[in-house]
Image (tube, rainbow, N blue to C red; front, side, top):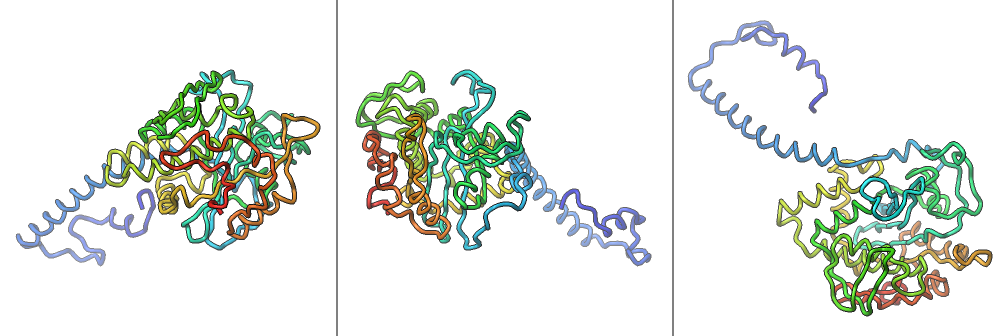
Length: 392
């Protein structure tokens, strides 16, 4: 490999011209031998020059990816990794207002995980489950090291909003909190912010969805009439952020919109024929690698390509969408708390590579919102939080 040092290379570098490794002088080459050698070097040169272009592309894309060493930050005090071929990934959408995200509000001194989904890919890699964790869920937040102020470091909390974990200790604390909450070890971590999300959607050429009723929300910059729309990046961001434009204005309703959008996004990716267009594939790879932050085991083009191949055969109908079973907190209607007996069923299903049973979500607050049917993914009705029997 480039950069590696080998004894044979060092020895070769010190030999006199025309001297063999044994110390004996080589015989002069014939004209035919010289011609064959020249041709071989010409072919090798062409391969190297062609490979240089490809190598530059990989080098550039690798340089785009930001990685966080979650394993080093968390150490060995983590749930056991289940070696059955399944995979669990924490996907976060951060709400930082820094840089290109400033137009979406004031920077209040930190970033939080506006969207949190645990993606479970089954052992056969042909189906997946997504468990959305409401950001307003009150959880036991473990002690965390991170980039937050010293006041917050290593201070556990018994009733902290779930999305505060990211603010306190960044990605590692978010992963630690999810693992503490679920008992499921996260194999990987993926994060995208507002600006990155918009760029991804625009590079894909938008996502087509149908709204059964108008959605107007000045806070999320969304203004859609009833009908079919190809949502660009700004509109897509508005849809997944809207709370007040539809339903009761709760975060639980917004989660259902996000889940419907994810299914539409998957269908869009599968429909555009990425691998038949090198330019389209490169443009998407360039945008994607610039838009995301991953764990250090996923922060290269090769690893991301491997993950993409793992997900390639999974279509939107192969994904079961679930919202963590919660109820409104009696002490604060703006917060939700877990329904322990039901959440245990959700995490048990992921640990054992099973679909989440209907009984795990029936009767939870996320099962009672009125968002179902508000948006449709192309010609498919977006199921409300994946709770219909067809999603089982």
